Length: 341
Image (cartoon, rainbow, N blue to C red):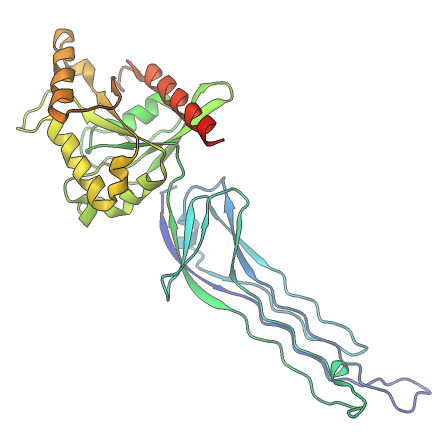
């Protein structure tokens, strides 16, 4: 299923049921009093985070959601049944905005978390409730109240422990295929990945983390160039960024250092805090370099960037260094979780 990370839907609660005007009609009772019952409350529309859903694609087909209306009251002071709620499942990581005001209504980040987005209408009052010492036979009732109606904008940000960033064809899709069961498309031309992929990397039993393969960024991505800003936002929720760099031979005038600076510029332009996030340099396609040239190439890149963070040399195609990288990621995530407890 194609990944969809934005959708617009209409939600409407159910109208409240009308109150009833009724009088008792019983044998041997000369003057029956008012006995009209209240209506039922209208149902509400809720959004519920579901960890088993990872796309908003279903909302391309179904865009309108309406809860059931409350039933009208009846004689003998019978209350109308309340309308049932409408519960709409959405992926975990969904931001919910009011389209009219651009107000953020909620952020659904935990499985089972619910958000009320359209409250049902209040019930109407039957004439039995209007009876008083001065009004023995009231003939008035109140109608059910209308419900809330909204147009919502849903935005999905991936919930992942690790995010992969880099220029197109840096090897992000190949890496996630090498370390997880995810199977993103892999080819030797730019923009092979047109939508994000999530992969669970299982280091050992009961120890795993989620890795997100973010589509490749190019210069000007923060302004919408290429796949642009629509995927930069997914990086904001990842705790650790792996910056993949193509270390293979080049036919152009570019260099690995220039590639890194290009991505850093786009990350900073989109959100300066991304540059402060923990980021590891992962030098990919090392198998394309002669063995006796690899150390010098790594040193040249580290010196050019004045890089102070972790550096890992791998080959996603052959698997060289990927197991060690996964182990180190797991160790770092475990340490972070212990610190947060």
